Image (cartoon, rainbow, N blue to C red; front, top):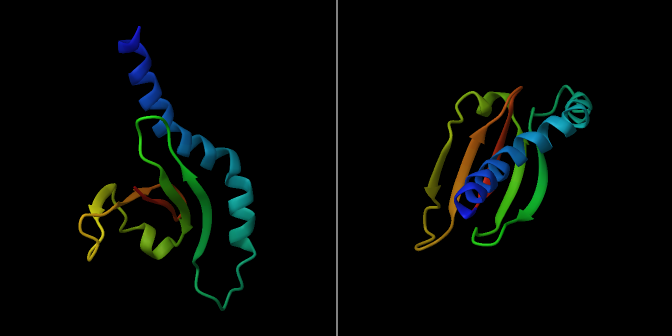
Length: 103
């Protein structure tokens, strides 16, 4: 039974961010249209900290920045000057959005 549950939980933890983004995408698109044209095209949505049993909490932030989003690749790396310390993970999404999480 446990051999089936753990892969499904891992899938749900990864898919959860994409589902959250998809359900709230109309709001995020509306918020982006409200940015003044003379201001930088950067907007952050703090999703808060979340974690599950056996998984350390991750402080997540959704970022809209079309210029930076083009260069974002999925990666987790240590934060400089924090040894030992948390990992900063980035994950590209769509439409100029990407996710960062501090683990």
